[in-house]
Length: 287
Image (cartoon, rainbow, N blue to C red; front, side, top):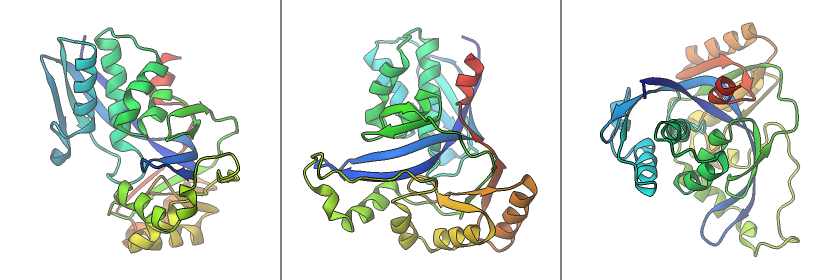
């Protein structure tokens, strides 16, 4: 193979509802995913073993999800080749935008083709799900509705908002596990046996996020950022388990003005102005 440069986009949750807390601690979800036009970039080249480096050095090495996923894939299918992956990071960490999962999904798709394993998307999703509940949505490659722990995916049937998207991150991340644990402590009813009459009924709504209250109670910077966005935009909400937020604006100019206020008032340390995308960049490239 020749050296590759591949995109790993951020995801956003269009909405996120938790319908059940399982006895193993995992969460049943009703959520929807779409993609942002901000991406990490993976530089992938042939190697004897798996080697992962990163523009944020503390994220490189064997602990990186890319390394763990590729190593397991290589072992499962008895591959003698390796890959060297350098990740040029642009997506904030612990932001609810799925950066690490997106990197892993892009690397896995590259390995599947480069090593000529040639698994179907469904098989890749089945393999990758134990490594992270966000990985499947990136492998699926298009805006989706997700159930289960995030691995049961269907194409998102509705139009996506045709507005300018402003992403903003307060500069500090949140542990996904800790946010879910906080949610669990205040929603004991969702641990009831999983029966049709005990499953939580949810009405899907743009910007709904069941984890938002827990995350805001754990992070004052997130809470202040979200309050400011809601004062200045049509609608704003938190993505995933936080701490990045999404605001929809009528124009790029409005989004630019809001971003400037956030940066000036130190409510955000990172912003991105762009659009919500239905397709993963690698899906687009295959079309």
